[in-house]
Image (spheres, one colour):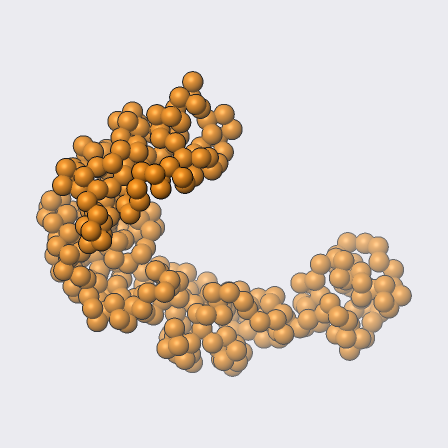
Length: 349
């Protein structure tokens, strides 16, 4: 993160996603108001804003432009203090303020702030950035997914780590992607992914699922982009989700075994769309050695939303709460723990 903050580009061609994001958000932003939250972690904003000013992508707005960012109540506050009639639409209020009050007095009002505005050059850069970012994402995904489809998981993961090191969205917040790049994919996960790819003859759906597992990118977003890059391939999102669910189940069992556990608990969704087979399995404790995906482990079928719970006894589980979708209100609610069979009897009959 510190490396990210120090890396301030001096030329537009070196901008990354976080630089375009800040540029977009600066239009109408008060000069004396600092950014909060994730944006402030993504780059050194105080150092980067002078670069944007120097490049002519933003400027300090005029007094009128600053007034246009204020709410009507703030404009009326300025007018009342200076004894001016407050009736009319927002444009009329601004015109009356500028016509009757000198600029220094306007700027001395507590509610007034100078603001940044985009220049014509800045607007052009922003417009061009969308296509550039789209192409950059396509190039990255094409490279990583092609490596996965060729069975080269090690180099695919390096490419993914390098992207995540540079990118602003911090996939897997708290993960040190520099360290991940050095370590690579663990032997156990490498074996798991390789077997799943081989099981599906290295098709595009299994490659996308593995890519999503390694990168943190959402399956939905990846499928949308990949459909443009591999138009001849069948990349159905449900099929990708099915492979992803298989991987999730196998990872869960690997982790349980690593912690000395010998069983997992089947967890179905408490709603009207849960299938009867999944409903009957809900709450069942299954020995890992007896587990079989599609029979007593999720996914039972394509579109299966079931998961596994590990590290808990049946008693501990029964003291928890579960989320369900109320069949009457169709709202998501928390309820005391119950199995799907108990839930169906209480809410569906």
